[in-house]
Amino acid sequence: MSALVLELQREALNATGSVSNLLRMAYTVARKLDIADFEEWIDSELNGYKSATAIPPYRMLRGSLRARNPYNGWIPLYVQSTKDAELFSKRSTGQSIGELESLLSGDKGNSGELIVYFSAEMEKMLMAGMSGPSMQPALMVMKSQVKGIIEIVRNTVLEWSLKLEKAGVLGQDMTFSSDEKARATAAPISYQVQNQTVIHSMNQSQFQQGTTDSVQAIVQQPLDVSAIADIVKELRTHLDSFNLDKATHEEVLADIATIEAQQGSPKPRAGIIKETLRSVRTVLESTISNAAGTALPGILEKIGGLLS
Image (cartoon, rainbow, N blue to C red; front, side, top):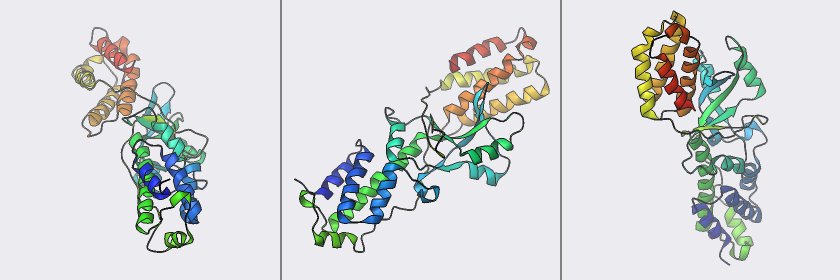
């Protein structure tokens, strides 16, 4: 039988392997070596963090605020205070690695947004500041952020196993000698997880409400970029002919600007584009009787085709 630490390295180097399985192997090693701090970290990653204050910085997620409109679905939610916007745009997740892995299962590209629901207290704060009817707020983050958390855990275990090997701690036949245990706990070997925050990008899934700041998943088909560009061009060309009142006209212009901003972004978010198009359709459908003989019916049909 090969050395346990070397088996741990092989598992860590297997990019397609389960990190949950890797952590169980690492837990066995840490337990046999009596390394309590690393054992505690592994237990938290396997079973979830019980306290928000114990969640490491690398489990911080960043995203865009949205609110669930009962008619238009998820729409952008704006917070006037820059400080408050920064506060609400970041959430940490204490979910187990197994739960996080399940969010990405079956999605090799890790594309799509995830929905992170707020704790009851923060949700109440956000809803209290809304003008008009209160809508459930949430944070949309990109799936690759969850992938980033999982990879940090994998890399941490790999680095630890390499340090053990360098110190001559191998664990032949699933056991460690007293000498190996002494070397494993001696400096300069460190088992501290790097204090870092990884912020990549993600697409549309949702974290479950019920546990604080937890996550779930929704898969969304990519939108036709060319068709969206054509619709935006038609809207700008014909908007003045729709006989809209000033407030409605400005609302549609703002939505068009939102879509154009996403189109010009290095990483356009399909979820924002789709929900903004849905908002445009809802507004214009309510005014179609005032736009007889215009291009509006054709534009609405095209928008409907994209959203179907």
